[in-house]
Amino acid sequence: MATAAVLASREGKGRHYIPSSVILDLFGQIGPSRNATTATSKTSTGLPIAVTFCAARPPVLSHFSFSSAACPEPEGLSLAPKVISADADLVLLRVPVQPFGESNPMFSDYFVYRAHSQIPKLDLLPKSAPYYFGDKEIAILSCGDGKYAVAALQTLGMCTFKLHVYRSRPDGKPGSWTSKLLDIELNVKELPRDNSSSISLASQMLSYHRTTKVITLGGAKGTVGWVDLWRGILLCDVLEISPTLRDVPLPSVSKSDWRLFLDCCPYYLRDIIVDQSKSTIKYVKMNLHGGAWRATTWSMPIPVTSLNGWQFRCSALSTEIDIPADLKRHYKLLHKLMSGSANKEGSAAEEVLSLESLRMAYPTLSITDGDDIVYLLAKGTGMRAMPTVFSVDLSMPTLRGVAKLPKRHLGFMRYFLASGISKHIRTPEVIPLGKLRCKIRILVVKKAKVTPLSKLRCKMRILVIEKVGLLD
Image 1 (cartoon, rainbow, N blue to C red):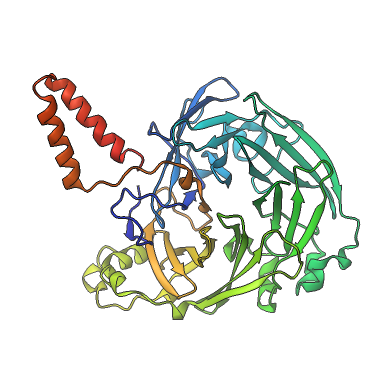
Image 2 (cartoon, rainbow, N blue to C red):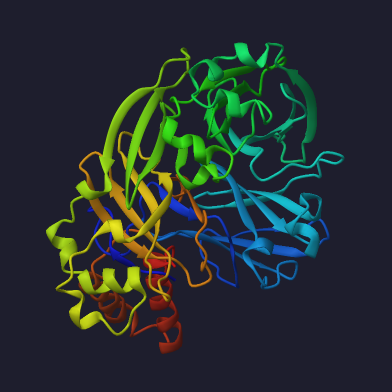
């Protein structure tokens, strides 16, 4: 597993600490890993499957491990099990069960993983046929008391959408899917996002809304937001009997973004999340300035009551980002991560670490309440440079940490999302090694006279696993 050059937080001590929020690898790993978070189920073809959550402290990626005959080691990430959406203690997973699962979701199974301190669960969702959804159209929603809903919004026309909702049953039996048409009757030119958008003319060349991410606001009505990261959010109370769509524009697009609108992946420069307390929507946008970049954040209170509710939070230029003294000790490692050069470590300590020398994009906002930390994918210019994750506090602005990505992540693309699932998993008590040895020694003294050595060793092993078993 990847290791961090510098950990991004000073909370806790030692590697046993699990934070309340993590950055989660979108692509699952295949292997027999098991721990206290392992949940089991069966695929639609009847094969057993086990899913395990492996926590890590940001900026290192946490990940899910999958073990099943239905999940052979994929030749590429496109056929790997994938994290689709996360909310509270729930994660929606898509598992390809046939080779065609890469290009068609009808050949995939969807599972809902629920984190629990004692009995984690893994539910197989019934098929939604004849409707199938793209990964960017679907979201998981926690409804409390062990219940949940899965919602998908499909674009049928310029302003016509179909909402699909699956609701779990309290008795644990499979629920069912329902579908409803939702229309926006206004003329495109009269809609609020186009009144505030500098690219409204270009936007009319496409459909009014192209969902690129889904956020879960929650609440009694089950509010979900389907986000077009270039233009706006369609909010819908999916648990209502007669749900409607409400349109909320994003902060205005600057003229410098015009050339990127039709050609650039929206994730490359933007992200939007709901914080852990469900009190705020946070939004970040990056602007490129030659070799440098500027990242700006806004927030909007929940519930959303105004179309103009965005509030500026902070803005930072890459040339302004400070590298703290405790990070400077890691110049050699940082240089190696960024350049991929194994031959220049000797001179690395004398070089000035410059973020402008890196290609940095795909911002991912932290969901921790009140902070302005963003995780950025970075890659150096060297032939052997590996993608890395940089943690930056935009409010300071300060570099907080750096971590290598797993070796299977070779390209430059979106690999992770922020999740609070770790908050719902029991964190092992952190015991310094000296005290742990002391406890084992006491156990030996107390039990040696009456317990065979083989059983004693077993008990000692269990004690150690109970204390450190949750971390990969």
